Image (cartoon, rainbow, N blue to C red; front, side, top):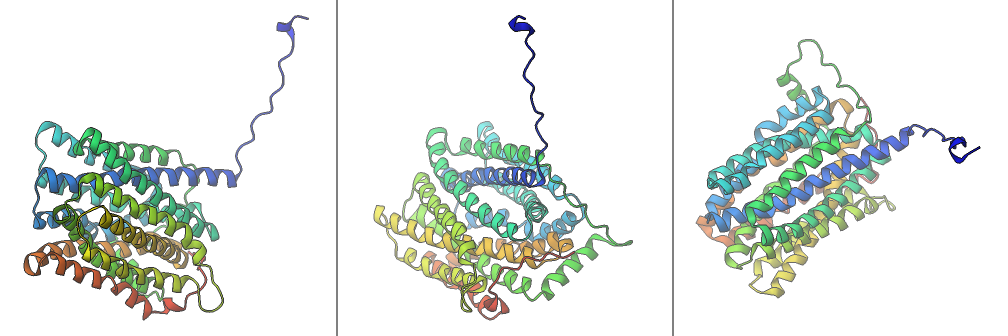
Length: 433
């Protein structure tokens, strides 16, 4: 018998993946898809303000208008988006949102190439992109409990927070390199590509999603929105967390507007220095996300989820104070980088922990709406805070305005301190229908 006549070796057909393997694969696709979006978003978070401040010579008030445009949509879209998410397949909404976001952002480098880049264009793109991202984000966060359940949900949120912070850091440093090599407007193309990659990852997920719960006959979108509002406001855990998040977000929005003006105009930072220091925020975010889940574990009767949330919020005003005394030079850049790292370490530990708490205590049929209510109240009014920051500078000056914003960041801590959350020790894991 010749070699060609020899029987081929038998191969064992590959066994289909187990449910555990499929969930693990889909969680990886989900995490990677969202993380790539964060990577691209970090580039735009440096490039777009740099375009406005340096290329288009925006004034402090014009910068506040740009920030307001980027933060206005949740005030209109959040509640409707939550009701829509609870009515329709969440993964499909997330996928289409990523695709639409990439098309919108493409207008910025296209405008620079064709010569019609302007502050109004940045405002319009920021406005529409924020609206699309709001619905997409609500769908994405509401979809996660379909893959990860129980204790796995808290672990998934913690891992996601660390991954987001790591890619955010990488994106900030990548932004400095791309801006130096390609120019500010062309660097935005990397974010456009990230939307495409993110959308592709979502199309590869195969874990079955529970069908949307049928709404009662005669149910309307407005009625479902009111139902979600009532559920969130009456909930003893959800409502204090949302109020604390709102207080903190309003103060930090004002601070962030003023901080950019301060370091670029007064301290003469370049876009590269700004990108490097913003990368410190993401380094702190990685540390906060990795430590948050472990630190939230109960220890005796004095430590657990509630005390962790309180400590993370108390850190926010404390680390802003040194920035108020900063001057030009490398030494102060290092100090501010350290403050930014500590701020985001606390913010990310708080963010991933409170998100797990809210997902854990919320009934499954309200997941989209409770998140939307939180988004509406937390992010919706931020455009007013951004406009107020710009107006306050013209009245009392830049540094006094920053001092007021830093003091206001203590509001979230005070809200939680006066709520039942301070007594919460173990992470809730039940998500009834």
